[in-house]
Amino acid sequence: MELLEKDEKYIISLLKEGKKLDAIAFVKDKTGMTLKEAKDYIDKKVNNEYYEKNISISKEDKEYICSLINENKKLQAVAFLHKEKEMTLKEAKDYIDREVLKNKITAKKPIHKRGYIFDEKLDILIPNLTRQKKALKIMLSIFLVLLVITLIQLIFLDRSSDIKMIILRYSISGILLLIITLPLIILNIHIIKNKLKKLENLELSNQFEVKAFISNFELFLQVLLILIFIIIIPIFFVKINYKDYKGIFYFFVLIAITVAGIYELLKILKNKKYSLNIDSREIALLYNKNEMKSIKIEKINYINFYAKKSRRGISSNIPVIQIFDMEKNIFTEMKVKISDYILLKKYFKKYEVLVNDEFNRL
Image (tube, rainbow, N blue to C red):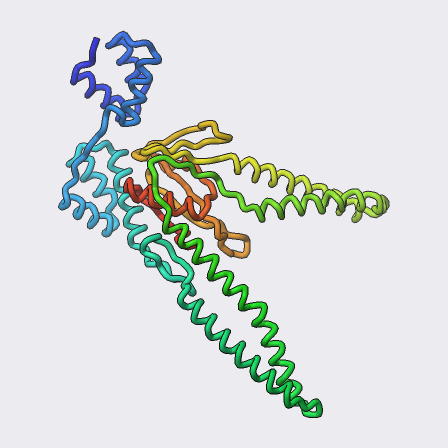
């Protein structure tokens, strides 16, 4: 037996009230479906596969809602949507919360960072290569001047003059410093240029995978430290004076640090197995290539990109993505490569997903 229009409306009303089990039971009784078939039918409705709710909010209504939000009258805005647009209180509240978040993001002042400029195409801050090239030219000029001064001093070297010897020492020191610094600056400019070129050539496809990023240097450092502690422990064990409680205490501290280090290493290796599989309008979280859960683009509340900070307040240069569902729960959180960060920003921009970018740099 097929469901009538009034039955569909009744099912939708049950879903609005959060009575999913009642909706499944109703479909099962009304149509003669099996329990699994009824559940699948309702799940598809919940996921908007068959049912899409389109609430038309005019430009005037949006302006009015924005004015209420700006005046900090959130309750009035919720009441307006609930009454005028026949939204449930939860739907109205979620809509207003989203608008508040959108206003906060759009109202943010443009990020200015010394030595960086904003790239419109990549939509991030990038190192100011023009300034770096100017600095390089100045340093090259200084290098040449110091080189000429040093050569002249060597030709007319007077060891009896303390002033001339001091000038010579400083000139040679400056030359040596610039010999080390200049190649590093040139290399840095070259690396940034290549990186920017690759990022600009990135193309967004309907299907791509984003793997959790783990720094090889971080991994190497973690392994190295563990190995050092593993070597130190037996040496300390042999040389320890068991009558000295302080020595025994330090021995157990070493063991505790080693165990903690191994635990952190295992966590890093575990996190490396996570990935996101983006397929058109759906994002799946994978662990070791196996799907754990998925979310449709319509079910995403907003995206947050940020950089983790150390205890000293130094920001990491690795972006972290957070995906929030409509209930504001974190669907996933993981570190990603810069190239994946750019791709993800393009992807979410394409589907008009709200993005709060606190990372926003190369």
